[in-house]
Image (tube, rainbow, N blue to C red; front, side, top):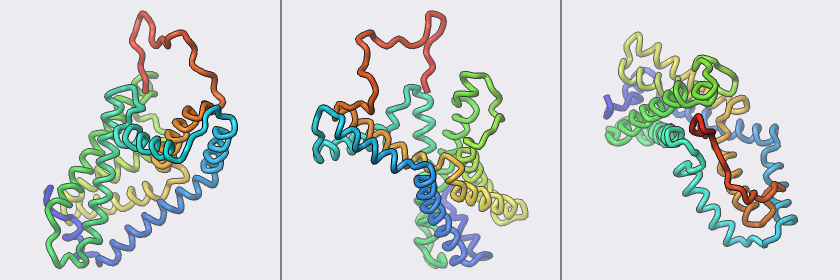
Length: 259
């Protein structure tokens, strides 16, 4: 199962051009949805204005070389290793989901576009990456959903308490889970049902960006870089300097829970 390309079997029933068109449409939805989200929420305008304020109100001059250095630090810290998470479990779950999603999407594109008409056998590495990526998303995503979410772990709410903010994680989990189920069942009757639900959940995942937290993955690195620049410039985004008193978290009765 791990080394079989499910799209190769699917090509006997659905033309490869149809599959490729679907992937292109999903990519276009990501671009258009993210741009709409940026314009609608005025995120880009906020970042540019905050960037200007950090230069005018800052006490230090930040050069281009420093900005590039901070961009590399942001990439290595907040993006690649998610160091901003205080909770080790939250960090591991996030990294599993993030790297699993990247591998899952990249392998999908390679298997659909890398070998037109599937005349040449696909390298076993790509189907394996596709399956392992989907598994990583499921492990990290379900771990987060049932045990780590703030309203579940700290507030005691039911993990089945759903809101619009959960649209991204739920559609991502549905897409990854149904992909594995479809691959396992093949093109049987139940396999076709799983495939149809897989296509639907993927369309929801990539088509609901203006209403979900999908674009958060693009805003988060920008916000982290802007924070570094503001601190280096001395403006601190108009926030007061840290107090001399050491920060105290938690209480005598329990350890702090940071997310």
